[in-house]
Amino acid sequence: MASLSNKPAVWGGVVAAFVAAGVAAYVTTSRHNAAPASAATTTGGTSQAIPTTGSAPVSVPQGVMPQAAPATGALPVVSERHTDPGQEYYRQGRYDLAIAFWTKAAAAGDALAAHQLGVEYMDGKPWVVPRDYDKARKYHQQAASAGDPRSMFDIGSMYEFGLGVTSDLKQAAGWYGHSADYGFAEGQYNLATMLESGEAGRRDEVDAYKYYLLAAAGGFTGVPYDNQRLRINRDAPTPAELLARRLSPAQISDASARAKAFKVITGPLKL
Image 1 (cartoon, rainbow, N blue to C red):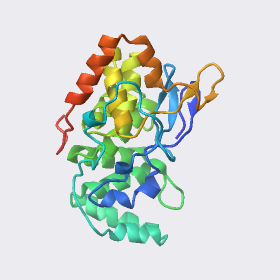
Image 2 (spheres, helix red, strand yellow; image 1 turned 135 degrees about the vertical axis):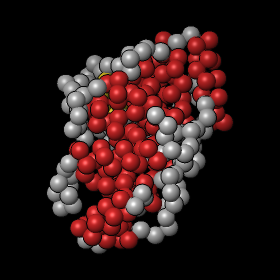
Image 3 (cartoon, helix red, strand yellow; image 1 turned 180 degrees about the vertical axis):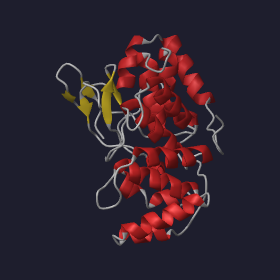
Image 4 (cartoon, rainbow, N blue to C red; image 1 turned 90 degrees about the vertical axis):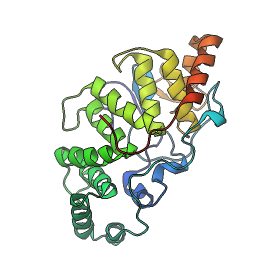
């Protein structure tokens, strides 16, 4: 999914590809437990995580302490299923049966099925289902309410890029914030960029650096990007490293302490 703004887009991979990720999304540990890699689009001069494909994460920024990371292991999941007929149908290319299974399961309260439907209706792959942002938001809302941070993140993306809704950066930041609270590294990263730029409705560089640290500890650091040449440059500093250059040692220490004190929320989302 590309940025709908006129800011340069950077593709490096992320929020693990929704189709490939669907298999692991239905077991105890989610597809995001395996430290997904960065994809970014620039927002306010800072790269922003977006749903796409990718591979390995990059280095951890200054000040991060691995022992401070709350989400390097399994993310909280809202239900557990060791087998999923929907995924079996999907792997066989019997997409109509997969969608029918997930639709019936979601109607019965299965949040994992709701998340998968949200992904499929948001992606709109023509051989699976037509794109329908209203249905995507409905199912992502169901999964998010049950405590799935991936759907919280995707709702944030819908508000950020105006997918089926009026673009609203404060709403986007709020949903990224929920995802961040549940320990989702991509949500932490996107919230950091919006806190740094002020697009979250407030500007707080210390809190932004805290979330950069948490995201990096979870395996997501963004793509080093040369804003002058408008291209990926692996030798360029990450957004967190650039921010660290502006912060005082006391501010970095404060952000690190906040990251260390961070506790992941689990269970249903309380709005």
